[in-house]
Image (cartoon, rainbow, N blue to C red; front, side, top):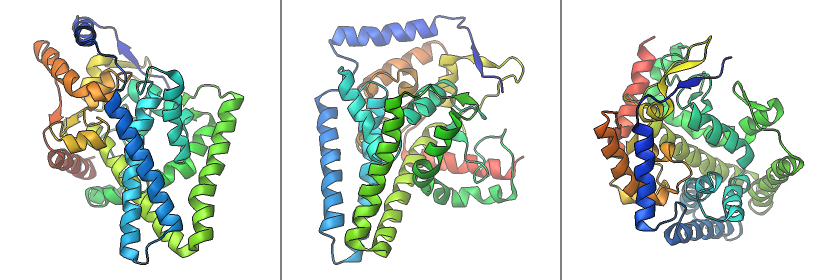
Length: 357
C-alpha cells in the first residue's frame, strides 16, 4: 500500500497560525508544557486510582452495588489518567523535563497497554494520517462498525447506531489483550512499520504486561475469588472502553468530519496537512469545564492535532487564536457546543453509513 502524502502549502495560513501561537507564549511568558494545575490534577487522579484499588481488593464492601459503582469509578479514573497524564507525557508536553514526560507516559504501561506501541499508533500514524481509511488505525473497527464510506458494508451495520456502545466497551480489553501483541509480533500498525524496538523496549513491553497481569488479575483473584474478580474486572474494563472510544469518536467520527481518500498510485491527498487536520477533526463542549478537566483538553481536539507538543492546559486560549485565523483564511473550524450535540452527530453518522452503501 502506498503511504499517503500531502500537498505542499500554497498560502501563508500555516505560517501565520504558528506565528500567532508562538507570539502568545512569548508575550505571556508561558512555557508550552504543563503547569501546577496539571501536576495537581495528575496527583489527584493517581492517588485516587491507587486508593480505590486498595479498597476494592483489600477492603471490599459487603454491598455489591457499592463495589460495582467503585469498579465503574475505577474505569473513569483509568480513562482520566490516560487523558491527562499519559497522553501529555507521551506527546512530551507534560513537563519540560524529559524524564518526567517518560514517567507520565509509562503510566499507560502500568494500566496494561504499551507506550511504545501507542506512540507509533497515535503520535505518528493517527496524528499524521487522521481519518484516512486503511492507514489511521483509530478508525478501523471492522467488521463490527463501519466508520466511513470507504469501508465495506455488512448487513449488521444497519443496526450499528444501536449497538455501537457495546462495541466501544470492548476497546480496552481488545487493546491490552490483543492489539498490542498483534503490533508487537507483526512489527507494524496497519501498513506502516513501527520503529525498531531496542532491548529496553522489549523488556518494558513484557515486564509491564506481566506486572499488569499480576496486579489486576492474580492478586484480586487471590483475595476476592474468581467470580467476584471477573464481574468487577469486566465492569472496570468495559466502562473504560466506552469512555475512551466515545471521547475519540466525538472528535473524529461525525457528520461534519471528512474521511479523505488518497491516490492509490501516487499516495497524494488533495489537501495540505494543516487543512487536512481541520477537516478531519472537531471540538466539542469546550465551554464545559468538567468535560475539559476530565478529558485532558481532548475536547479541544483541533488545537491538539495542530499543536500536539503543547500541553492541553493551554488549549482554551489557543482555540481563540486558531478560530480567528481560520475565519480570516476561510478555513472550516468544526465545533459542537455540547456533548449531546456531538453524540447526536455521531449517532446520525453511524446510522447513515449503516443504511447507505
